[in-house]
Image (cartoon, rainbow, N blue to C red):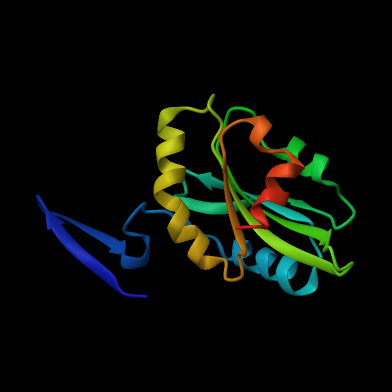
Amino acid sequence: MESKQWLFHDCTFLLTEANAASGMAVHDECKLRFLELKAKRTHRFIIFKIEEKQKQVVVEKVGEPSQSYDDFAASLPADECRYAVYDFDFVTAENCQKSRIFFIAWSPDTSRIRNKMIYASSKDRFKRELDGIQVELQATDPTEMVLMSLRVGLTK
């Protein structure tokens, strides 16, 4: 990964080019847990949080395969932004069992504007780290976080 240096008023700043948009790094555990969800199906969902002091995205919660969509929805905070991935199982009209991995940008109306801005500016960079996302959803309030939103996302 290439780094660039800038000199401002006798201070040198290093910034990794991949993180230039938001300055947020992605903790290795995020990628590891996502690969486990995608390849081994050992998780139903993963919720990610930005640790502002550490300037990185970290895993906040991992849902077991037996956990339900309701467990996932209940794990999202009512007044703070998060990223999440959800492994959604469904049966097609032809009676075939399928699965889709959803990336959900959770940005509730009640969250602070600064929080929304940080998550919005970091989203694309973070999503690129998770190779295999099939559907992306943006949710701003609990009514958008119903199972139907996931089903509608399958047609996109």
